Amino acid sequence: MQVIKEYMQRAYESGLLPDEFICYGKQGNLVEIEEEGTGIRRTVLTFCTNDVLGLVQNQAVQQAAIDAILQYGTSNSSCSVLSGRIDLHQQLEDEISAFKHLSHTQLFLNAWMAMQALMDAYCHQAISVPGFQNTRETLILTDVLNHGCIVSAIANADTRSGKLFGHSPRVRVRAYRHCNMDDLARKLQRYARPGDRIMLVSDAVFSMDGDIAPLPTMIDILSKYEGSVLVMDEAHASGAIGATGRGIYEYFNILPQDVIARGIAPVIMTTFSKFAASAGAAISTHVAELKPLLNLSPTSIGTISLPAPTTAAALESIRQVRQHPELVQRLQENTRYLRSRLIEHDFDVIGETNVIPVFCRQNLIRNTLPAR
Image 1 (cartoon, rainbow, N blue to C red):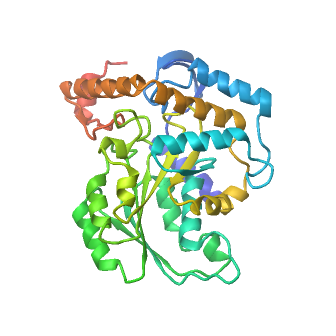
Image 2: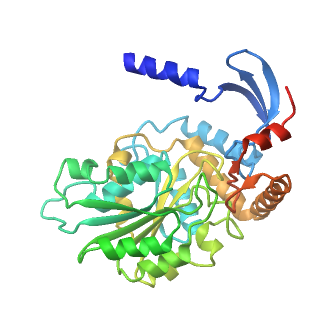
Image 3: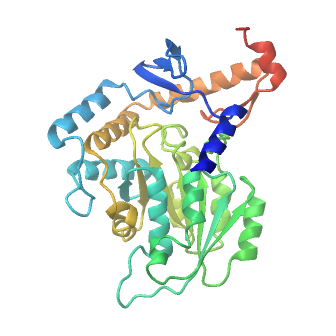
């Protein structure tokens, strides 16, 4: 522990750690906070929430969560394969399947667990089955700026539980330059071997840069590798892009069925912490057999299922989005407005979505911010 103490002391001295605040209440985007260091309380306008559609305090969403608590309690207290599955799970899975145009959906507590489960299921089939042996290696292509949940899952894809406790072929991971489709094509041509099972994984909207993956070109490239799998992480795309907020496929006017017709298996990960005023994640696919395999993955059977109030809040949020597309349109209008105003004031703004990275040059900060 001495190393930890010395490390943290140097981090404090270097000013690398963020200020910490405690929130005592929220009213829309106004929050009452207390500075941990001084104990001073004040009400401020927050620009750092993931509640992109403002549904966290939507009355219908709140009531759905309350009703679920009264009917089921605060926790299911079991994993889904034992006694932890409730009808709200099925309803939420059906809602997501309809929203994403993929017929089979499996829920998870968060995106990190969902992505780990997908790697276990696809690369190692999650559990050993007598008389079955896979002899084909997996090649995973990943954007260098993918979210940490993807990086964590694929970095250990060759040593996840399916590999650790049983025999399955190697998993090889290769990164390509950010949204650089020429580099992706080169990497596939260079590293793909006959018989490989090929998976391409990418954020749909990149969580730190705010740009959108070039889905049509990705599909064109993968179509040369029949049977390949295209995984899109739509954490920041759901509810944010596309005319009705369905995500990257709608944004490019493509249906998952169009991709299937070209010999590619689309997989979509949806998360509920941004647009759906809740927590949790889901994996959607058109392959019926993948869902029970995901359900048997260690990240499913090793922990409780999504709690009832969390499930109900996500379910009602998605229904609100489907019933009120103006919520998505308002977000997109606000995004265009904020981006244009920042640019007018000489800020360096990148990306093209409601994820708005702003580069703050030192002289710009000095000239713009009022003196304290």
